[in-house]
Image (cartoon, rainbow, N blue to C red; front, side, top):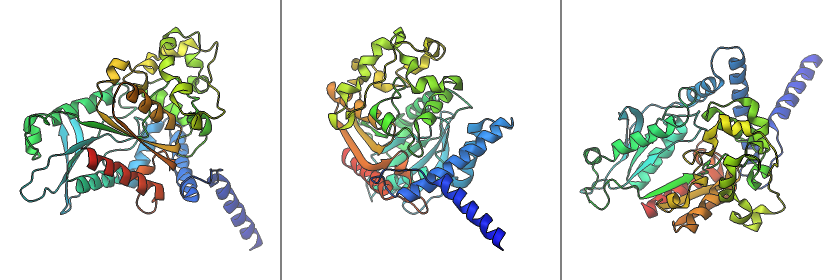
Length: 384
């Protein structure tokens, strides 16, 4: 009996040690976030073991785990019709809100789910619930794109899938199928972009938010760097060098011209820069950019795009979270867009963390998840 109690106590202590991580008091539902993070870390470690054993790629294994616990069929209700189809060969899940009597649907959202270009699906519970809510509350058609993932494809194929499906959807005959207005001033036009804690650059992994949130749950810095390398089919041997910005050192000429577009000392307010110092290496590893030039491609890093490209973008909404390595990407993007005349709404949540907007139902319901979701949909409702 005594030995059983000792063993149980040891197991509880071990579990507590694995789950517990120090978190700022300002983060939403900290203990629940610890449990969520521990679950995700556990799944990552299982998938890494599967990869080590040579059974399959670790991202394939991890996504199998994620989808196995969260896949949802295309289930319709009286308020929202849900169908799985394909647009020009790209799988999509379409959510159609119920139009008011005599009034056709006039609004739509092309939704691109997150997951580091490698994980999740338009068909899992979290994104299905978000898009269902959007369709119902906005009385709109939501097209959620099931773009192909790493390791099936790599950059820029995910972008090509999204562009191909979007172009197909904007054809007049397709819009008519989904009961859209045929107003010539509105047809075939992207009216706005709404970005939820977007990843926008791979030049600097030492912005204040990367430094502040280096080990924050769900998306610590080293995981974000690995997602970038996976996206470009890069070498994991570069992870440590990239985390200290060796890939964009002063001797890397290709990065020199772009560095000014990412000068966070001027783009971020003093309340964020605080006492953080830029990390700019004099010498580094020029081989990284030579082998992975995609790191400096504006298609993967919109934050470094030319001004004449940015000025043609539509009205923009950017949601950022304090406890997220990507916080400063979003804030700097907002400032660059504003500088060229684009109307921007920056919606910041002090208690938010990366991924929170999809965590709105039990058992992964977070207060900040509900508030970010509602704020995002409210902005769409007011601006679409």
